[in-house]
Length: 291
Image (cartoon, rainbow, N blue to C red; front, side, top):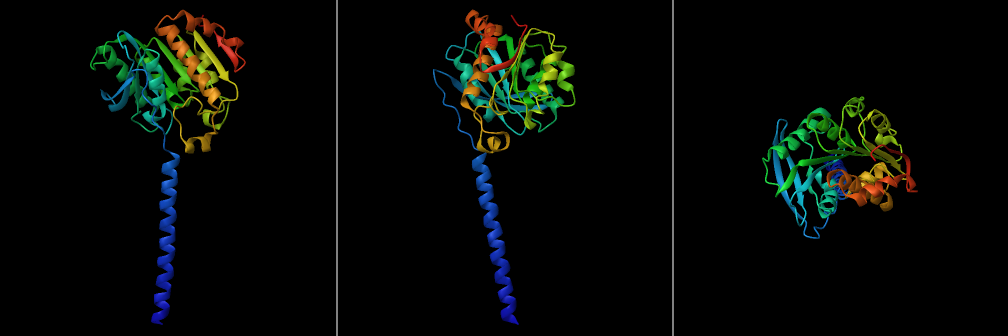
């Protein structure tokens, strides 16, 4: 009888050990699948961690500076659902290389869009008030760029604190909040869409585009997945949303950059490229009342 008890205990122990090993392996696999490669700082771009005090609590950000930040416009680039600032860090480096001071925050709330919008508006307000030393940045020239859920929360922020430009990177609306706010914007707007699918609510950004009365540029990047604008992205996200094509990521990046340069820097070459967007075979459903 004692032998039977010992044998049963050994079986339970082996089963427990096996289950524990599986959980550990699963945890390691998920951690690996969520890992990202930080972008390399190049061309004199520098980075610092800055914490902003807002009415919705503290917000942690990366701030990227160009080599010559004198009178540089400020661009705030915001991540999507379940993500953080590290998933848009590539935008920080890229736009800093183009002469912008770039603030990349982690939104403080998991899915409270209204409170996230207030927190982002708080950052804009702090920039305008000069509460942080952003190394001679032009605090009167501010743009908001938001991906996915960040497209909605930046839109809500733009409603509260006027900015000079707003860009939605495959933005996703919730309960029509974005559509209602979009019609009140007066500054130039751009909406860059991916192909319709589950992760962008089957392209519900179209309702926001229709509601925008301000000068706007909108189009779909042909063949792109929802995560195409995210830079860097991870394996887990691509397994869920589809693997992105680098060519479509470049289109999101380059047209966003041209739009920001045209609006915030009055760059004539960038404006000329935007005027020819309708001729780009990589784009579809082009709407351009911006120029």
